[in-house]
Structure formats: structure tokens, C-alpha cells
Length: 193
Length: 193
DNA sequence: ACCTGAACACCGTTCAAGT
DNA sequence: ACCTGAACACCGTTCAAGT
Image (cartoon, rainbow over all chains, first blue to last red; front, side, top):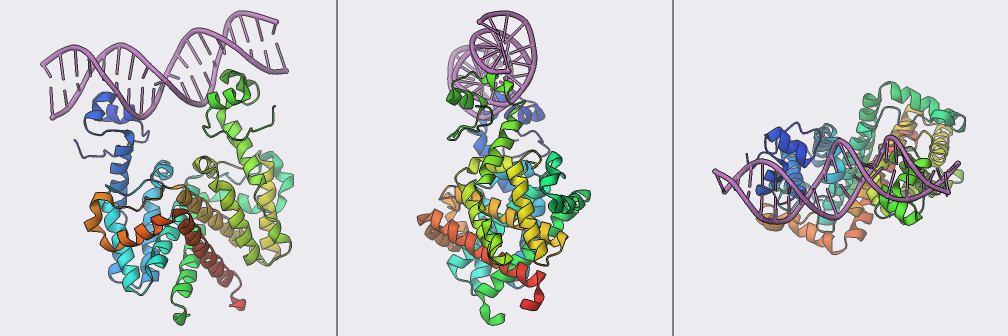
């Protein structure tokens, strides 16, 4: 009961979490010292499910792609946590630390310099988080509403998108991800261009 | 006093905003119907400052880059608003609608298909929002703390990054942005590869 | 038309008191 | 060692009452 970060807390509130555990809200403070602590536990639980095994048997651009896709899938189902987790230090989150180390060493041993490796990780993560946000946004996010006359061309394309918001978000993510990784590969190992 | 979304609201709370305006919190509901309304006003105010004039006199990959840099700069100074604004529909936000229309038509008239154009906008935005998050994260976000022995290689590179977190975040963003745009250009107009 | 002040149902957190 | 219940300082929002 101590280490478990119980799943299914849609309303991530101390009271709600306590109710789900059958205790009072104040009882939680015998196990964690603040809400920040439970966020760290959740972050680590979530990051544990990200699949980065591709780095074992693929070249880094391909592995990066698999990692990013898995990363995004993990967070799409828990989008309300993204703004909290995206700025959360990884100290005391062992699974997250392990993941970063693996990705970093894979890039490094493939000849990518340490600064570029960190930058690549940060860049991929930025796209992943941003895309997960996008996937969680309402389908009509680009609907100009009463301002249609201001954006006739964009509105038409946005309506097409709204018809299959999730599929469109997936396509947009994969287009950007492929473009990003392709660009990174050319930048970091230009001889293979 | 009605339309103004007063600046300097660090604590974006109805009470705080009311205090800054010298009225009571409940008085605000004579002008807006909910906090969501003031967020829309703020979103529009903020997006008004994004510079997309580059689309007037540059080719789309270059213009996209200028737009993204300006976009990110706008949100870096108001990072606490990102999670709210990133999922906010743009209906009733005229400046935002205007911006999207301009970017979309610029891409479209350059020969980019409507679906790709929207995907490119979404992809750039994802990177911008994610990178703005990253820039607002604490400098020691990648510090493994007591788990140093789990990530010796990554920790070293992360420490280098922490020494100049903001500069590193900028570099990572620009590396990813250039790579992304380069990849998009190749994908959308392969003949110019 | 616009404001105030009290009230409501919530937050995260603390702390004395119990077992 | 772990829990409860009351309390605190906050949220966003409503509403009767004032001018």
C-alpha cells in the first residue's frame, strides 16, 4: 500500500486518491510528504511503461522513432499529467533515470557527441509532449466558430481534421517525428546523407 | 476595463486578478462568464505578439522557422499558461484565427497540400509548446540526485547542461527546429532535395 | 449597469488526538 | 506506526443585496 501509485485516478486529487484507497486524505501524509511526491511516483510508474528496447537492436534513428512513439502513447492516456510531469526533475525516479541513461549511451556509442545526444533527447521529448497535448485537445480546437470569415481557407482544412481528430493528430505526429529524426540524422552524421 | 487582460498576473487567479484591478473577485463575473473566458482573452493577447510577418517575404521553410522562434519566445515568458492554452479552442480568439489563416495560406500557396499544411502547423506547434515547457523546467531537471550510479554517462552530460540551462534549451530547440523543418521540406517538396 | 459580501463546494496541508 | 477529524488558507463560482 505504501509504494503503490494506484491506477485509475482520473481526478488526481489527494482527497480522490484517498477515497479510492479507503482512507482519509490526511492519512496519505504518513506515506508521502506532499503531492509532489506522489507525482514523482506516478511519473516513474508511467515512464516504466515506455518501451526503449529498440535501442538494443536498431540503429539510433530507427530506435529513436520507436521510443518516441511509445513515449507518446504512454502519455496520451494520461494527458492531464503532462504539464506536471514535463517540468518534474527526474531525481528519485529510478525508472526514468534508467531510461535516459539507456537512450543517452545508445546515442553516444553510435558516435553522437554528448551535447548533441542530450539535445536530441530534449528535442524528441518536446515533440512528444507537445504532440500528446495536441492529441488530448478537443476535436474542434481549430474551429474558428463565429470568426469563420476571417479564416476561410484554414477553416476548411481544420474541419477535415476535426472529422478524425485522433487519426489526424497521429498522422501529424508521425510526419513531424519522421521529419525531425531525418533532419537530426543528417545533422549528426552528415556522411550518411 | 472590460477587454483589457491586464498584464503582470503572475498568480493567475480570479482573486489575484480582481485585486490587481481593485475590485472584488465576484465583480469579474459581470464582464466574463467564467475563468475560461479570461483565458481566451489572454490567449488572444499573447498570440497577437507572435511575429508571422516572415511569411510575407521568405520561402515557407525559412518563414516557418522565424514563426516558430517568435512563437516560443512569446510563451517562454508565460510558461504557466501553456498547459491551459495548448488545449484551448481558438474560436472567439480573432488574433489566433488570423495567424493560423496566414500561415496556412502561405503554405498552401507554396504548393503544400491542405492536409500537410495543417499537419505541419500542428507539428511545429507541438515542438514549440514542448520546448517552451522545457525552457521553463528547473535547471536540474535531469539531475539524477541520489541515483547517480544508475546513470553515470547521462548524469555527466546533464550536469554540463545544467550549467547553462536556458542556453542549452535554446540550442536544443533550434537544433530540433532546424532538423524538423529540413525534414518537412524534403518530405513536402522532394524535388528540391 | 456594476459592485460587494457572504456563502458554497472544493483544493493541499497541518496537527492534535486517538488506536 | 498509522489513522481520524477538525481546522487553515486557498480555489472558482453563485447570488442576494446594495448603488
